[in-house]
Amino acid sequence: MNIQLIRNATLIVQDQVHQVFIPVEHDRVKELANLMDSIPPIFAELTQQIVVHAEKQLRVKLSTSVYFTLMDHLNFAVERFHQGINITNKVYWEIKNYYPDEFQVGQYALKQVNEALSVELPVEEAANIAFHLINAQGEQSESPNGVRYAKMIGSIVNLARYNFHIDLEMDNVHYTRFITHVKFFVERFFSDQMLHDSDNALFDQIAGLYPQAMLGALKIKDYIEQVYGKPVPNDELAYLAVHIQRLMRYNQIE
Image 1 (cartoon, helix red, strand yellow):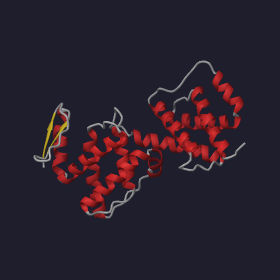
Image 2 (image 1 turned 90 degrees about the vertical axis):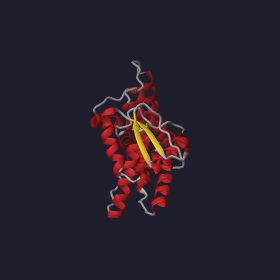
Image 3 (image 1 turned 120 degrees about the vertical axis):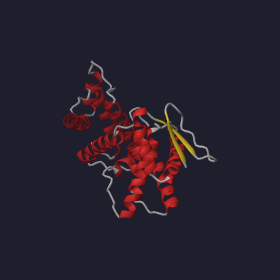
Image 4 (image 1 turned 180 degrees about the vertical axis):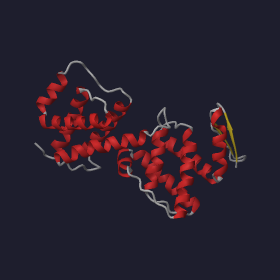
């Protein structure tokens, strides 16, 4: 495969000539060229196949940087496999459950790699691949947003679960609604776009209607502010309490 790096171009793959054109900044050309030279061509082909499939399934345009990060990751994962090294993914469960679409693409990618290279990479690799896809969807695709988001989502869910002894069933509509709200909450938190109104009428109303749920929301607020050092507005707490109340009602918690 002839791989060329040029600036301000769109990635193109032509089956007959087998050329890949990827836009890069001038000061990164040497670094990326060295990377490409050190990785067998099969990984570029697999990465191209995975990215095309991911963009179709996720209905998004991924950052071109994913071609390099994912290709390098796959190569390293196969190297570790041959060396008998298994690195545990500490956010496997979170990514699998909170980013199911990306995880499904990760499973597809894992199957393609295993079949193409006759290896048996661990199932955790599906989450690792999903992590790269999650990051590639943001404008700042090189920042570890996927892990940050997954960790905060997992912490919020666990606080709700253990504070109220809530049994969260993955295929339950109430669980799905709660997770969806928490995912948007986390995205707003990290993008500094949290809901905020100087009038606390909604907060006071929800606190009066659902005092237990609001206590749970306040515990989540305390945790987030302690760990991340950023305030959580009362409007966000009100909506969070509403979704906690739905879970409580479903689990018949008064």
